[in-house]
Amino acid sequence: MKTNPKATVLLLLTLAFLGNQVSVYSQAGGSAVPFLLISPDARSSGMGEVGTAIADDINAVFWNPAGLAFQDSVEVSIDEYVPWRQVSLTFSKWLPQFNADLFYSYGTIGQYFEDLNGTLAINAVFMNLGEFTRTLEDGSTKGKFQSNEFAIGLSYGTIIAEDLGIGVQLRFIRSNLAPISISGEAAGVGNSVSFDIGMLWKPYELYIFGAKLEDFLSVCFNLQNVGPKITYRKESDPLPTTLKLGAAFNVLRDEFNDLKLAFDISKLLVKRDSLGSDPIPKSLITGWENAGVEFAVGAEYWYEHIVALRAGYFTEPTTLGNRKYWNFGAGVRYDIFQLDFSFINTIEENHPLANTMRFSLLVDWK
Image 1 (cartoon, helix red, strand yellow):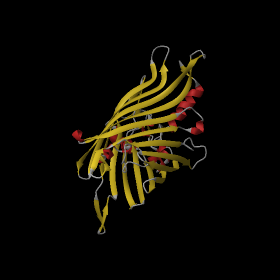
Image 2: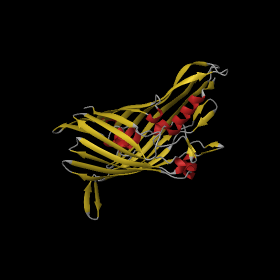
Image 3: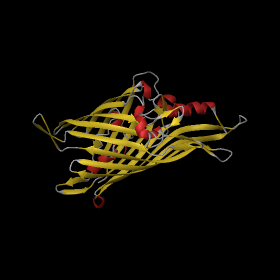
Image 4: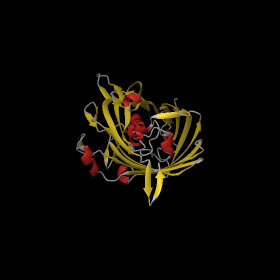
């Protein structure tokens, strides 16, 4: 089997621009399965891809599993509490500029378990890469095939000090880029596993210049996608191992208003050149040789905890792909439901991510 030229171009473009957080191949390094770095929820996307230090709902399984540690119980009436439970669903038609059949879907569910002294969550991510034509060596075609990638994860977060939480996630990853060939080889199929580990510090009281601030600050780190390379036939590509650092500030909170500011800094720890790529754990050290980091900053405002407005900005240096764009979003709560929407407004024209919209549903399952 040989690859259809048009299909090859589309697949490479898809892979090159798939993630909101990393380019597959760049001067600084490259990685496989970049769909792992797409922010799954419209809330954080609307804030410019920020969420590592906020991580205050079930989507912490992506941003920072340590955030699950602070989700323990929900007050349903006076002096009556039930275990915290949430469900989140997301769908997005991806890279709309290509007019291709690409979409991203995500779902997660989690609950606090007193016997485990922590919160467990499972999640699944599916990335549809579209339809391609199978072309044989003699130039004839033999039907079409679908390309996709998916991952299934299990997360756990627990408190290790009064204001300090830690979390981990284990994940299975499968990439189906091309079907089994005539010879029986799975030319474009690869599997791998990975883990995330994060920590989140949320001091309940903080004194600044003598002023007492409550629930004002959260600081964190999250090391994502640490695992062995994924192999396609004979070639192996590294996972998009990334270190994220973040901080969030609750600058205004009263009966009617809630305003948060947050920022994330991300470093891709992948070392790749013309000779190949370094494996884990070596790449955790050599990856620092790559120039530049990604930076995101965003804000979220809630009025009466019913309506939210969000905005943020994402940027990265030329060595990492030179993506720069504004994100905008909104949200609304009703009873146990929260519906969020986000929109990417790119600075450059004809950018693959331009006009990308995301919709998320969050359910407090009481």
